[in-house]
Length: 538
Image (tube, rainbow, N blue to C red; front, top):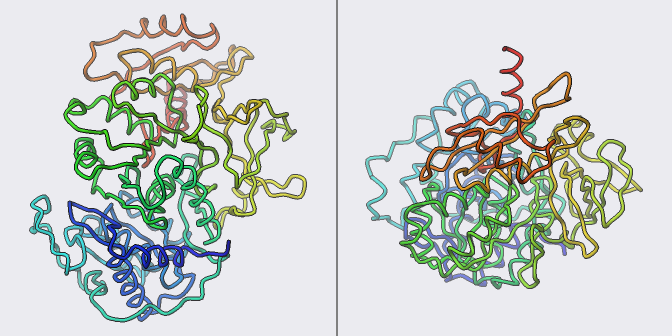
């Protein structure tokens, strides 16, 4: 298959011209309309000198302009660099310099973070939009939820997104090849500065299509109504959401992840597909309004970014009658590595099987010696359709990508078990293992036991250095708001009944919140660093 992202989208849009592509605040944008406005934006960008391969940052919240910007850049062979709209000036400066981006799309809510970088000359062009401008001007929005008073005129010297999409013209044919850059996504930076992950068109189309093939066993291509439950700048949000526009599906965009708005959107638009992190599903299940909404249209509920215990999946099934499919993925894999299929009985606790585009092997994390399958070890993956390394990060590339037997392999850092039938089970992150009294304690196992307590909604377990024991075990937990208080000793006794003696936490600390990535995943390494810094000061 030799395809590009733009060709795949254009062909899909032409075949489904009158079908709804995007829903936002109740307003529908058809595939034909979306294709037209993306072409106009691409033409306007090309007239202003944007070249094939040029990196352009998308610094926008969820809104139609985000989607139009991304595909408008694809139309001329330019390379989108999507980032979270919550970043401040320091992060913007780092990513702009690292990616080589000199143009940025932004909005009224975050222009103040762009302005000093624009004034300094780091950005040569800023394309500004009001998120209250909603859809193109010919799609006037009358929904009262968007206050017209929020409209802020474009600052002097910047380009107006609204003006650019009004311009007539066709985007020039870019001559994009499968091996050309389609996008650079930045990892959330759980281990230092964010790393750019460059996807070629070939990698993006192959990976997202493979993932859609698994979903198609439950919801056929072109039949899905997808609630965009994870950020568009995150690989989960692209592989399970945005890429649906390459298959003729409909995407429901919400400006923010308010849980009651999520529930209302599922009922109103008869959503078939939903995805998010385990935190997202817990918030839904524990929301007081969940029983007031009709969720019967859901067919494909998918969780990624972290492991979801079987006990929670059972609670979800009891409440909604739906199963939560899971998978193991990575930005570096352009999405899924494993996924649970919709047409087989799934063993409890499994994250599915390795997708067909990947070769997989297990190794000892320290020696790189291959482990047998079935067996346990660090998961390595390889494909003819994979990235070759990080953007401008040769040292990080050397740590994460390794050549074995003449093939390039990506080190996922995930310790997994693969059984004799190929089912994959998550054990832990290789760098997160706690070494206590000579034992290797798996934090996620302890966290699973803690979150099974009826009063605990989230947990993070880390190792604290100890001269005699190697590391002691500390648990940080969040209590459920609707449950009575629980004492530290009660949780320790709870763990003693369910864990080996060497796995029981030495301390339990109660927190209101725990640090999370933009996608909602608890940042265990950040917690561990904070706890060790506190200990060093004491």
